[in-house]
Image (cartoon, rainbow, N blue to C red; front, side, top):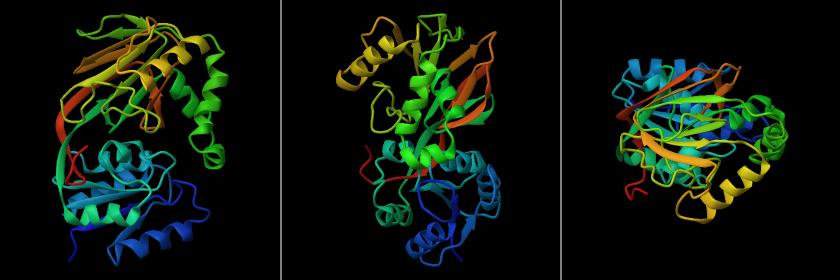
Amino acid sequence: MTDIVVILNPTAGNLETIRDCQERVESIVGGRPIRITSHAGEAEALARRAAEEGFGRVVAAGGDGTVNHVANGIAGSNAALGILPMGTVNVFAMELGLPSNNLKLCWEIIQTGNVRLVDLPSANGKYFVQLGGIGLDAQAVKETTLAFKRSLGPLSYLISAAHIAARQPPKLSIESEDAPVREGSFVLVGNGRLYGGPFPFFKQAIVDDGLLDVVVFKRLGFLEIIKYLHDVVFSSDIRVPEVEYFQTRQLRVSSEQDVPVELDGEVAGNCPVDFQMHAKALSVLSPSALP
């Protein structure tokens, strides 16, 4: 009897066929049970069932979206989340210090069983592990097709964002007792430091500090984005006047317009959205030497 089960989303990543993806995972996990998703969102139900059946380690084999679904499925249970990163970007795996280009080593980490408790934020009751976005990036996710992602990878989001940034930005209302600003046009909410890949956007973020890290664009346009990207990627702090950064435990973002929300790279409805932090609510299998 094994206490490890793998939830495989074969549509994640850039693998050419479902069979190739399945065979790759089978060659790594050595006979451990694999449950394969057949439609969008099924990973959450499969993970919840696995936790109810008593599996102590539930492994998400896929991208950030698959990790999100499995985390939602095991939330509140005694199961720990393992990750075999096979997606386009694998940001949460990077955050945990997992070697995204070495699935065999990731599997060894899962088998070792080193558990770390990390925070688990939620948005309108749905959990996410790494990032929530309202505005520009959510619209980019909404307008980026799966085929586009597979052909261009992370670049596909940047191309979509460039088209969207030329439009009139939405007006977002920010409600939080810790917010230094009440309005913005683009909001990012982070659990960890990384956004969009190996880029430390949320400079003060720690995945187990019990705080949401919030970045608010006051105005949105090419010039502001360029300033922001340069400042965040190449300096130790955010100094762009068009951008505010703060930490909080609760946040509400609303708009009179129809503005989409994304969680871990997948569209999750529209404003208004209420964010809450659940401190150290998720067990993850991570390297012994924590980042």
